[in-house]
Image (cartoon, rainbow, N blue to C red; front, side):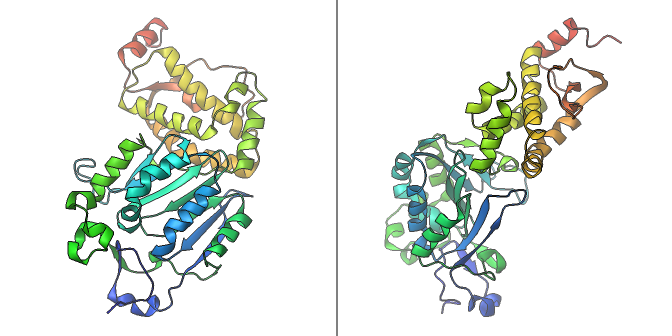
Length: 359
């Protein structure tokens, strides 16, 4: 006998001890302003499994023609060896026509929805919209147009509930589709081979079909359209940085993380290349010091982990590389103090020529 009348995905199995709270579980949502934001909202939505695909397609219909797909799943031991309680892998596709994304996903959609070790979503950072169906099988929506999202949810029969319960509030187990005997699965699953039910297999297929790339979860963030406009306005105030105003600022933040990662593994470029990376951090700091306080705080938090890792990686901090003097920054720019530990051949050669290693 089922513990609840709520229609869960196959990948969520509530504990028997939650029987009392499960009786109170209904569809619904909550929403609130995002931290450090004045115009961006997060909706947290509990929907029965039969409504998830409609929600996804309704949200896609409201987005611009080009979006990117988000996929999150737990790796096997080969991908994350010797890591207990490992975090899931996070992948983004490039921006591409949303219809192309939907066409690729069509044969996988039911498996993505039901498997308890998979989360997925659709986003466009340029307009500040994201929908993500997590491994907890809760829908998370980020938007700067909360009225439109409320209308969309209302058309799906979902209403606001300030005391809404979610899967994450209940004791439960996560199950992969392989946990079920084939004869107990719905018809569209029972016809699939065992390999095709394995989330490791079908998630890898999707990453290949959509040419997805891994992203550090620490660098996952949301910028509203208004926040992006403030950033563009600030970049245009500096003649060197104004050319970056047409680029997505989120990509520049990710590039700073990539630079720090390369420094940790061993920087293989020249001293000029290294300076380019530091100049990128100058650009970010220039924006931080010229936007409203809430946005500045958010951007500071986004780069905080990469900054911390670079600080830890710097040696010879009594010395300082030459920094451009054309920036009216309050920060002392720690990234110019010292040098990274693992220097490639080119960088070390250039440092020797510059006299860095002289007493």
